[in-house]
Image (cartoon, rainbow, N blue to C red; front, side, top):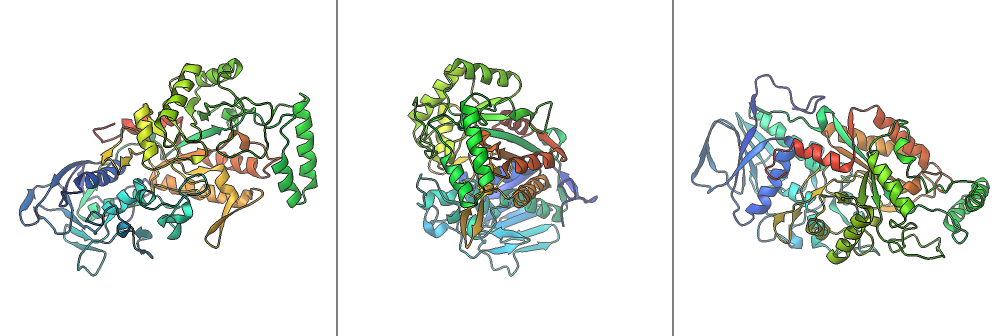
Amino acid sequence: MRFNDEGFVNNQESTMVDKIIFLYQNQRRGIEIRYAISILAEILGVKIEVRNYVPNEVSTQTQTLVISYGKNKPKVIGESHIHIFASGFFSKSYLTLESLPQTPLIWYEELPVLYLGRSEMQELVMKNARIVESKFDIIASTFFMVTRYEELLTDHKDQWGRYPCTKTIAHGEDFLHIPVVNAYARLLSDWILMCGMKIKETERWNGHRMATSLTCDIDHLRRYSWFSFPIKSIFRATKEKNWHRIQKLFADYLLVNLGFRVDPYNNLEVIPTLNFPDGIPWTFFVRPEYKKSKLFIPWNSGPMSPARYDVSNPNLQYRLRELFLDGVEIGLHPGFGTQDDEKRLLEQKDYFEQTLSLKVHGARQHYILWKAPVTWRLYESVGLEYDSSLTYTRAEGFRGGICTPFRPFDIESRRVLNVWELPVTLMDQQLFWHQADGEYVRQLSMEVEESTRRAFELIDTIERYRGLFNLIWHNSSLEDISYPGILDTFSGILEYLAHKDIYIDTCINILNCWRSSSISDNK
């Protein structure tokens, strides 16, 4: 049984259901289990009533659908029942290396099975009348993905302390391009249909098929100064023996510094009108920290390099406020060290808000310096409404296995946090990287045809799951002298989106739209 073009299953004989009773056996990990089922229910837009059960007792007598989760089936008196056999994930091995998925994984209907339930069943899923039994533990699998469970248990880090995508199960088993949690929710909806019931559709995204947030990380507003020479770009062009580009770089450098041309990074007002002359809503993430220096070291472009602008500058303040009045959301782009330092994060947020006289709703970590679950916890503590950092630096796709907004779970404190995550789908810099023998290799230029294909496939996937396409495009990635092909790729992505049925808005408005249709009690 498969979903129609609208994303839901057609079955004229099915009974409509807007509420499900969910029973679980494991009382010790009830908080974690409740969270996992709430994520799936939120995606499907169905309310759930959660109870604990004892295997040998009659757990419930009802005419509505019952979904149970445990090692043993409960006694249910009713017509429709789905039982998911629990794996050993939430057992004594929880939070140990033994609880990680065993690879290679098996697959079921083009989906990775991270955890198998403990059952003597020969098949993964069995149906008998209005009863469905499954060894596919989608509860543990969902929890594993959205909490970034493996990132807490294993101590893999790159030189900046970030978790590398090459060390993840999703990379190793090749499903980083699949929003598996949304797919698990679809699978659960399939099982519900097998029971003769159908979920009442919840309208999302103001009636559109998908949502899009176009976001821009403003790392620098100045490309050139007399003391900042484009050495890296010239080096890349020299390796490619592209003498014409070297001439263009020299000309650009001289014309900008002599005042005959606007610096290519000084483009804030241009971005909202690219491909859309009347303008569209963007979210700009702006860096609050600034280190005054006459000498800019051109190769110092890592996370510790200062922003080449100062938000206390009156001219920049005026420009940002005008953009805000025109519908651009101004978000925070916290710097190095703020991912696990509450004091530093709060200082940057307070300084930013006071300097610009603007309320900040959300943030994205500069250089994707982000750590689960610590950064989420800090965002809640300093009063931010959302984070939008959930991605990898070298690989596009679904780091949390999900393409819709969600509230994160803090594994260490065992609670749902009062902050939201807007997961990132694609970042411009990821398109410079391609896989070779299991590793990522950076290309000197952006291959337009290959890059747009990768972007289009992600957009189509998100449209299928009625999710959020969250794009990062740096303001420094809008000129193709330094990075040939990057501007054509960006224009191609915007043109492709223009032909989709999308709700496009700022991050905070996207979040508010999702919350307005949420079935959760904690919106």
